[in-house]
Amino acid sequence: MDLDKRIKNNHRPLCVIDIKWAMGFIGKNGFFADAINCFENLSECQSGLLISVKDKKLHPFECDNQWHYTFFIPEDWVQPKEEKYRAYTLEEFIEAMESGLFESWIKMRHAKTKRECEFLYTGYQRTIDKDYICLGSNYFDFEQLLRDYEIPDLNGKWHPFGVEE
Picture 1 (cartoon, helix red, strand yellow):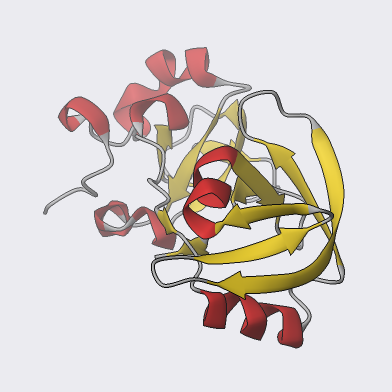
Picture 2: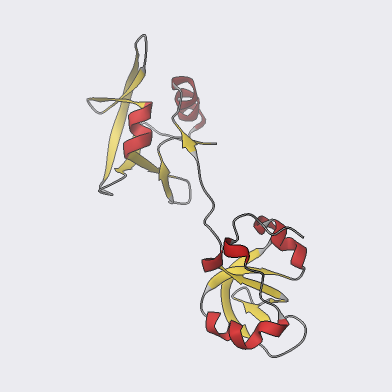
């Protein structure tokens, strides 16, 4: 069995033989499963908070969803999912505006200072080598927006001002 590539240092999921050691992970986030092969792809595992560890043969790990599982791997042992973004093209940005992803007022924040601002989208400008959008009275190219700014998704989580690949 090959574990998910994001699991660090070839750690293996904790099981019934690790109960005493697993007690140290109570209150920590991690991934739960009833079948060891679920750890081949972490998206198949239940993620949550380890609430308790019971000294029993089957399903010793209790998740905050009130279910008990056979296997657990702490989140510390897993590399975060790498999110990759690329800059919008003008066509993609206009399509996103038309679909309602962006409104006439665009909420964003500076990636380094985390200072939030809202700009009124007032148009765009095409040149031979770059496309720019006008936010307020400032023109931004899409590479600059990707590099320097973040936008919230529908759940309020901030991510780079770009398209997820």
